[in-house]
Image (cartoon, rainbow over all chains, first blue to last red; front, side, top):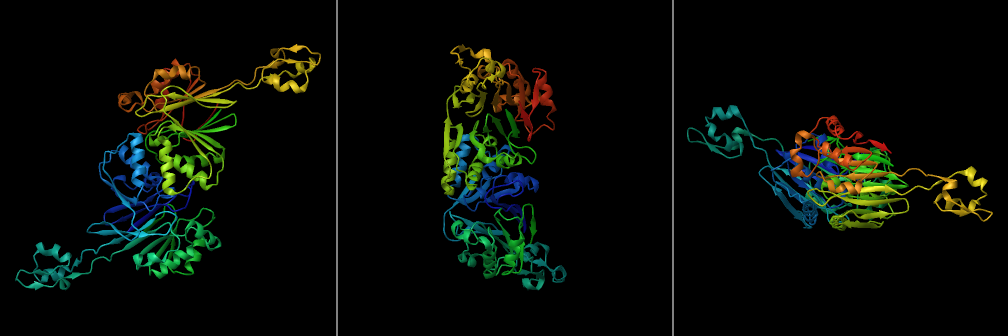
Length: 301
Length: 301
């Protein structure tokens, strides 16, 4: 999985602090997660091809998470896109986008498919043979979801010497990679484990922004490889979390610890802080493997 | 008048080509004209104080002219603005903005006052003692207006020696500056022209974007000091003007000539051209005083 942070600051976009948007590349998919104002410019900076984005996930309808969406949809159209675009986001998003398209009399040449979310439980919202995406219901001022992306098992690898020794026809190689037993040229059943090795290990990524401290997400994200969890505030402003329904770095780390996550990436920082060091140091007291997101940063895992 | 170009390219925002937005500063007003995506970032770059913007004029509901508006409105709110904000734009704009505010449950603490436009004639939409603003109905694919900003006469200047020679009480100085006749200490009527000089000359600025070649605007803008007129295409693509309802540089210059404008500023360039030189050279064949707008450029007149 490759995660590109296009923006990871809260509230208002500034010259050097972009609002939330990130791209997750995995198994041939290019998933766009949230889409703050100016996201299309950041996509260009990262040289991410617009046509490869087929699924956009919007966590909630606060502007710093979606004001760039209508611009991106329009740009796709101006660039003559013909690939379908799936948009997953809260109920109401379709109405906003459709109204703007209608008033501009600029209907898209490609198909826009909205998957409006309103459930308060974790739902499977996308699935193919390589990946699944579930919502993570969060606790924010308005209806908000995080998203967890889980790779499905990779094919097993052939132990090529053994396969040749046992005279297995090449026509069966695909079945073997898929974990099935096969028959060799002598008619003998060959058990899969004898001639194949475990494929690449699968990864999972959970995106949680914005939310108050919310233990109900723990079973949904349990054991996740990489958890992005918002940390709008440092401890000195912990009192603001209650009213704004945001989290501190320490709270994000507590969730990571209790959910047995392997790594924690912090983000959605309030722009009141001069440096990001405090976020890492406060979270690191609770959880050992803490990374800081920042605009333009890329994580490979 | 001081005109700051925040963005002057058509269609899609790019890393070094922003969509339409400009700021006109005149007589204590800071007018924002159009508001493409990312305008709030460009305002910050130009160090224009958000609170001074009290009037925003939106020409039409194509995204490259207004997608930055909702973000700006939200940012004003997050920065605790309490000054009223007047927005002049096509019918439908209020519905778009209100829907987004409602779904975010983020009603502004300041007052948003929409002035929705739907007339096909040139109307006075703003006026105070220093300036007037009229719409300029344009010919585009959807309902579109330009705007003409006209300064009202400046006060006359006192010819201080004459005023003192004629024993005029200081209490009358204000009346004199406003052009009125007064009575001196001996009870004699003093004609204004005898003791005052002409005040600063007034200026006018017309913003015309986007439009096909449209001679009906000539009487509305006749004699304007500075005309900003869109020039999306060069002559080699003049055939595209018909379908897209845009203008060439040559057509913009023809309007400037026929309207007896003093200066022409070109803009709204298609991003297909590597350089802006062609726009100036093609327009200059028709009209003598042609300037090129560009992102970040400031014109004083």
